[in-house]
Length: 155
Length: 438
Image 1 (cartoon, one colour):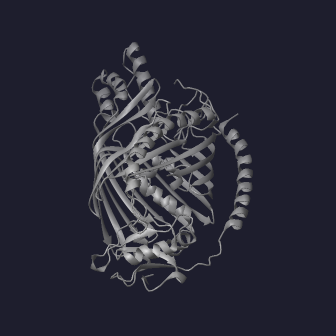
Image 2 (cartoon, one colour; image 1 turned 180 degrees about the vertical axis):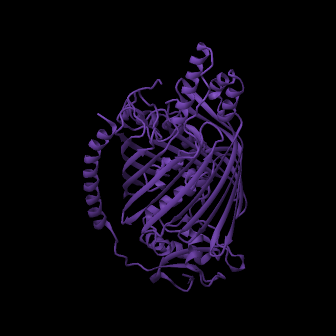
Image 3 (cartoon, rainbow over the protein chains, first blue to last red; image 1 turned 90 degrees about the vertical axis):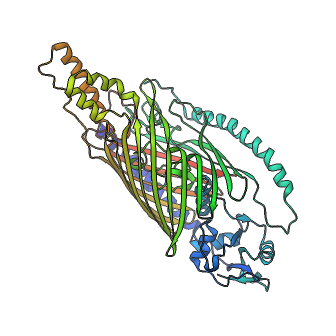
């Protein structure tokens, strides 16, 4: 069999397969797409912090481990909520349009090239609020309904 | 070429066996060192501690089917076996497992050790040291690493093994197989600075490396010395642009016997040897790439130019890829091409006028030279596929590649058999599971 004939023979089933795969893929994608969001997540710092407001790109730089050059030379230390928590998923969708898997892929690139480590993790909204309240250099995110006088919403 | 017939299960089993050894050592090390760090953790109110040592890993279990029975698709010139001749399905292409230990000695001093088990040039899965370096973070924006690091050749070179970090089954071979040397033993310095609303990072690397590759009878080595690369990466919002330039003095001694023969034929033979010999030859490359990834979709394109000033030629590879993300699915399509600017044939030695015995030898050497030149890859590939993030830290990918080799070229296929016809088309079916763990 000549190469061309051989290739054509294989191409036909491949085309069929591709079509089936695409249809199945699309169906599944629609089924899983867009989990409805209910939480409203806000970025918070300690009420003792000098930071009053941050832009989306400053927030992204801080939480993606890129150095954010804030006025006054401040270097906030980011804190993450637990992996799989609603607050965390919502926060990264809001700030960077990234899904948990995309964030994992992003950190894989950083960790496995020795370029850095992801933010430290806390266990819950209230744990985060407590840590941020006490530490003027920390920044985190919590559900908007849990904001109290100990923390300040910056984004 | 001698090849071990390697079944799918066999490749995975050997890969895992070796990794178990390597991992055992790593885990023991981490267990010994992490114990005091865990104990040092204070009350709940203290900020969460970063353990001094952390263990992370990643891997891929992949299979590839090739429609070409008379050659092998290995995905890299450094791997001895693949899909096609001998085994139409192969698990050797892309399957690997890796473990990494990161040591945060102080807030400024850290070290990384990464061990990878994948198909080696000699068809073993003995783990090798992919990374072994010590980093000193002088300021939050400036660090220096000493030891083994990945060369910043193209945008994804340093993450090329982490399939979980990419939408595709593999990085486009048309570009990424262009420069076979990917690691550097030496020094690497990185400096970043704000530019507008973005960040600009300049990375300079200096050192050298030895890269082994499979050969008809054994293996060869690419010796790169005086290796220098300079990479500039600009990131702003969803956009990334990167330009890289690199050069080195490269020696591949395995070609010497052929060119020694040419030199026996006087000035004409010496001129041919001087032109093609890979002996401390200045080799340079240039890479330009850009990506835009707002999350719901991505697009990415890169172009690389490689000039060996010798036998491997003066080559250009590029690709463009993109697709939408629908929930847990990423659909993508890629077009990739490789072309060569240098000659793919040479008139060689003038045979007429030579005594008959020398004429036979000259004809033979001319044929060997022309076989080498003709095997330079020229090809274009259309790929389409899907990545499915079906569970935490693991994805499944399926990809189809349709490659058309340039006239007279085998493309990036290896292990060409007598029945192989250059310039044809090849279809690949790929499936893989990629994972990361900590």
